Image (tube, rainbow, N blue to C red; front, top):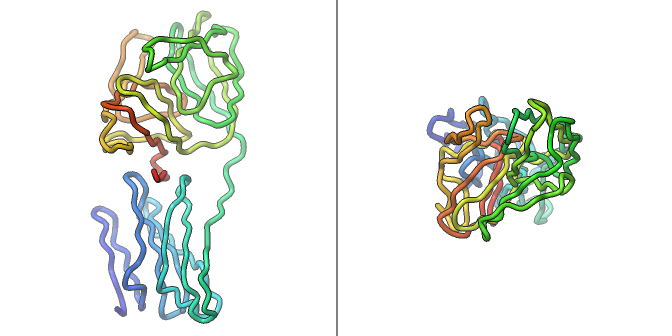
Length: 264
């Protein structure tokens, strides 16, 4: 076609004013925005576009000669970065392109602790924690198989897992340094599991991504030290731990709303 329009529900349509691949590649996950690879016939370029929340961002992937990239195939990796294979018609070659985006540097998170027990998680990989004076040395994790708590060393906390810590000296701040983490996969057992958050907020308003599908309930439970009660929530926020209920043993994918992880 000489022009084309692709509709995405509430997202404004994408209009291409030139001949493009009649079968553009469009991978989608539950939380990732639309991504498309296509051939711009007028300019002879292979292009890639994605929705950034307010507009379509278009990038020329290969504009050397006339690539003739009609047979493009697009996939997203666990960080949401695109990987594209395509046919270079001019040179008769099968080619591969990927987007290389540098990860943010080491991050520092301040996790506020209220007096008493707190449910926390470390939203980074390779966490290094600076314990405040008012926090107990003992940290507790939950074993969903034995349905019991076990002591965990402070320097052995793992990302994606929820823990109990106690601020016996009153309100204080636990500082966590580590590398950027926008998604993780966790093996959950049937019943209750303590899980953690990533570097960005994660919405559970739609069914969480699990294998098998539909294995985890939408509602999560966070602990409020001030009242000593649990509250239902549909959003994971960095630094907080949560109770999640699984109907069966499963693999859970947690990713920040700005990206998408793909379960293979």
